[in-house]
Length: 126
Image (tube, rainbow, N blue to C red; front, top):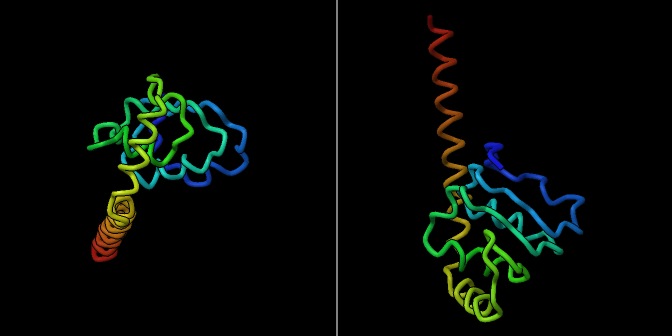
C-alpha cells in the first residue's frame, strides 16, 4: 500500500493465521521476497499489484506455483486448473531460477558496500 517495502525479512514470524495480505504498490522486485510470503500457511488472498515483480515473465504462474493455496491473486480468483498448471510450470523451472535473485541481491549489496568504502576513503584522504 505504497509503503516502499522492498524486503520482507522476518515478516512471516508470528503470522500463521494470516489469510489476507495486501502489499500492493510497493517496491518488491525479487522472487526471494515472494518466496518469504509463501511460508504463510493460511494465506488465501494476496495482492502484489503495483510492485515491480508483477512485470516479470510468468509472474502469476510462478507466484501461484509457490503458493498453491491462494484463492485470489491481485484481486483475480484462481481456478483449480490454473493452480495445477502453475504447480507444473513451477516444478519445471531450473532450481537456480529463484536463487538468481538472491545472488543478484548479494552482488548489489557488495557493490553498495564497496561504494560506501570508496566514499569513506575519499573523505579520509581529503
